[in-house]
Image 1 (cartoon, rainbow, N blue to C red):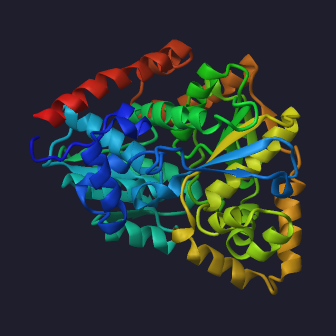
Image 2: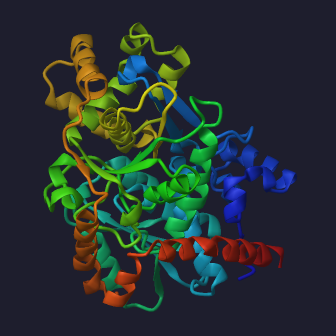
Image 3: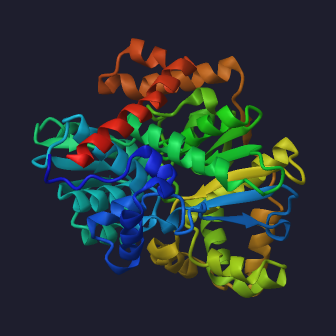
Length: 452
């Protein structure tokens, strides 16, 4: 155990100012000088060098609404995505509990960013990693995983076939030398996002609008990020949480199945760690709009400036938002319109990663369209953002809707060995609060192991 370089506690990830100043200073220096130095574990936080949450606020000129859309930026995390947070949390909990040792091979089922995070954190901790992911993702994701020393185990399909990665992982788990960071089912993922992402979201709106959060949107993926909604609701009980799905694969909304291209979103299941009690709405987003929106942000700077977008914000948009972030932004606009949020109201969402892993996605888009003039980009901007409709918003606050989601979860997880009793226990908010309370236990365990 002493050979493993332990990193931050949950509290230190939420409040990096609590990290010993010399360690914090060294970590910030190495973030850009040597990303493979283990000291970068102490850069796993939503906050910048000034301990301010990395965020942008989208103006009405771009969103077409009076409410503020506050976007937390994940591209500032080590490796370029906030997924290193749950990857680290699941690994460190396993290490302090003795469930994982340096002799184990770490398995990371993923469609991309969690896999990158698994490879990256395993590298920093001196562990071998194998990432199980679909064989039709962007080449940049595969390259990043291999850059960090991770091996690839590819399954058939695309973003819509994430369930196959889970099945392959459970098969590989029959080898006792393998330990899985099963992001879809391990509560460390839930704990990281409820504590660190949720707490950061609450801090992010201080001084913006009325200082409260009216809504929070996130595409489920593993549903880890949605756990931030639990913390937001604890602080602002009136807040509404919306889970976003691809229109082309609307499993939670209506049992739909199909292929889609919003990289970073897993589907065709209700993940084990998804607390459906805290989800108020399901909103469907068309996959083509997320790629078109990526084109607008990355290549439409002059257009955005003409619309009145601040030059510094327009510059940030060129690199700080990937397709799943576009999806989350569209969902935030739709939620704000549906709920009639007005001036002073804040809707918070997440940009999981930046543009650095999506060049090939835009190359594909450029091949598919005969022309991409400013007129085309202007029309896309209006259609996707400013004129986003309230269509395909599903209210799941009623008991019948919750029960339908619980049935989906049973269908997905009983076959993986979870009992009906365990799944039924998730129908009580007390289950989730008890899981969250373990943050304090792991804070103490991590600090104790680190001091040895």
